[in-house]
Image (cartoon, rainbow, N blue to C red; front, side):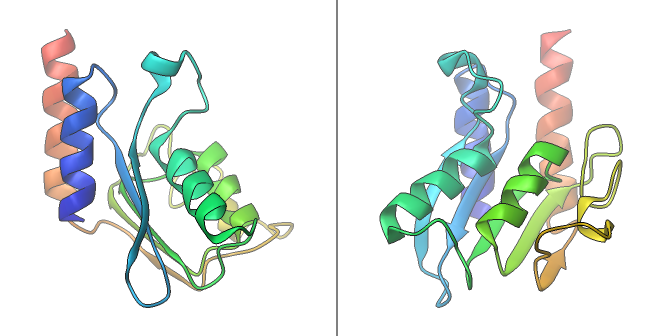
Length: 144
């Protein structure tokens, strides 16, 4: 999570909402990393999670990341949760909860839906929550 927080800080310095994400393989080795690039790329889908998942998939030359772990600083939105499902991730670890826009433990709770394509075997919510939430609060406070 330390590396994901570092990436989130980098994103904030670039004017992006500070969210960082990493994909690790089955052995815990780093496959990919990203921060949001929504503003830079003029792309509403350029969330850190999706960028990191795409890079890991290209690296492994497979559309399925079975056995892999996604670490992200904020609870994934419904778009990112659906991507996690389609990439068939084994584990999700996230920092701050997102009661307004989250799709895992809040909002639609995608992985609890009957028709969900794939659910991660393990979800660790709120890991380093305080650090992740503080970074987001500081970012938006400075924007106001």
